[in-house]
Image 1 (spheres, rainbow, N blue to C red):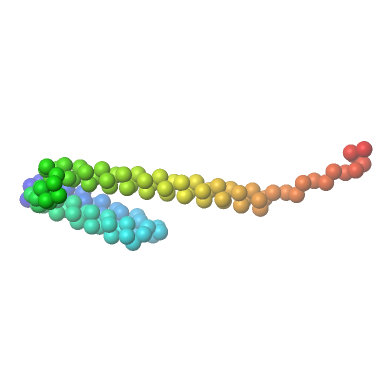
Image 2: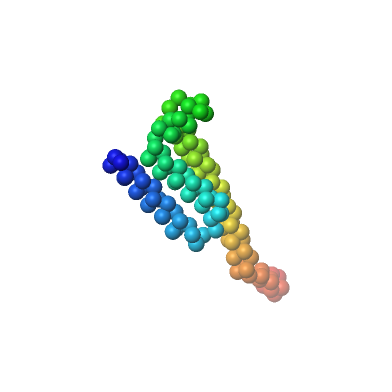
Amino acid sequence: MVLIQILLIVAVVVLLLLFLRHHGTTKTAAGVKIGFVLFMILAVIAVIRPQWVSLLAEIVGVGRGTDLMLYGLIVAFGFATINTYLRFKELELRYARLARAIAIRSAEAPAEIDEKTAA
């Protein structure tokens, strides 16, 4: 095995461990976790056997394996970007609802106008 392959596999394993450790306590969907693990496994396979990626690229009609990898990463980046955007929109909505609830709870009744001071 070449040194770069070892370094890339170590990087993939570290990413996988960080993802599973930091997202294990949140409400991350199981499908996302499974998808990420599969993506990391495919990354290790691509590092160990790059000729398999080239063969798959030929099967699906892409010129080279690197092009296929690039296209896959573009799709993954688009998914991650949309996912992040939707999460931020959800958080904004939650904060707005929370601010409204706090404002309603802490609102004071309007002071009644004293008839003597009004005359």
